[in-house]
Image 1 (tube, rainbow, N blue to C red):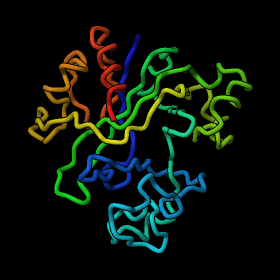
Image 2: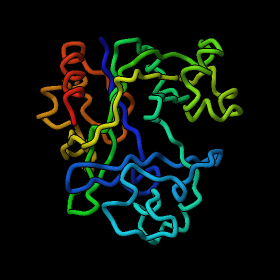
Image 3: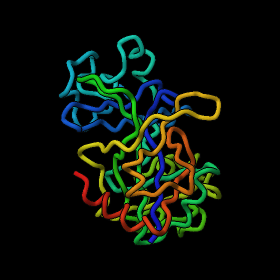
Image 4: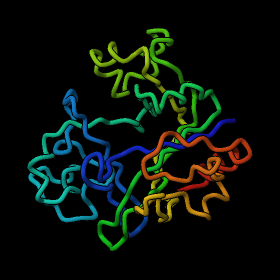
Length: 248
């Protein structure tokens, strides 16, 4: 089998905040903003899994994702469209960019692992990288290579497919991945990063030594702060998948 890991979700570079991590280990998955403003879902009208239960309500839209933003940014982000991808209702993911094109190689039985940046919200915890979910892959490929009825049957909840103007423009380069019903958004995040420094001496988040025992070292490419897909070495692929299935 093949196992690959990618970073998703809001962060300081795309959205301006880290996702919230709570003291009990649970977290909120907050998708990135959609700069094209084509989706009706916004941070102000979309509720998360926890609906603000870990914090006091700060906005008029009680329990919406906007409550996780600082008060100073809420007016700006309230009506911001969301790029909800991946989605964990029917387990689809899509990306038209070149760095993610290798995901088209995924096949039934492979695993796509998602990680994200989180920071303590109701307790003190510095920003770090955490495992947040996975797809047990059912199928993957370039959108244009799927029959229309397959797109309609398997990918209707995917952000790129929902917005047909964008889909038609992107379909020749859009990679779509469909997870089976065995896929999961984790209840509790799993820390996988530690701090290091790049060649210029700047802080850099890398895969921790402990997690290298499960996922390998990506052939020496340990940086996971902002990176292309990290393909797990075949010697670790099955072990990494079993580890994900064991997570809460």
